[in-house]
Length: 270
Image (cartoon, rainbow, N blue to C red; front, side, top):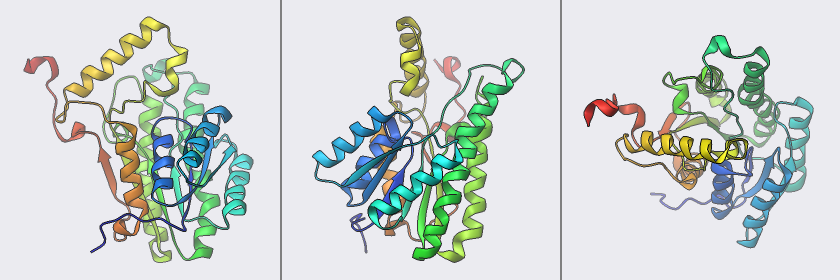
């Protein structure tokens, strides 16, 4: 029985890996032995992740890319293959939240931007990666979706729509590419302690405190009663990318502390 996750000799590409879940995932994959192509739209963040991996004895490169731009995606995938001689694992992690408004208040450009990054970006990354997997005789794709793709959530129409799209795209890809030994799975994180990711710098100090308090309160009402650390998602990505998950494809895995398993009465239960 295989119990140790070993990815030595594998090459992984992780989008949005300058911060949060992507950063933790890239580091976890490297720790398991994979060579990692770190990609992010913010060069300084991506370079930091690479430095942390190499300082720990791992192998990584950084390629700056906006995954909503097809030409940049193609160049990103080509760079990873050129640097490491192939590609075995794709983690579609990059994504944005979008405006916190009800649908009729959302500007078309705002909705389109979320669609372009979250869903079209996942399409582009997968489109240019799969030919390399076909050539190699297989591969693993892990899409980072969200619990918001499984349930409705307030003031998040674009985000919910795109994450729901990623979930069913995951299932569809599993159907088409299973015969080619390409496994495609998705993870739906719940509340993750990422200091609100990159939204933090766009908020005033008071707004940041209020948003953090809301997240912590909501996380406290789920069965495990806390937010997750990014590495708790990263570890599941490593598992799904490994031979230990060899018979898993089309799976939608929640890493949410039980958030979507129960109807939460919130204040009414106090």
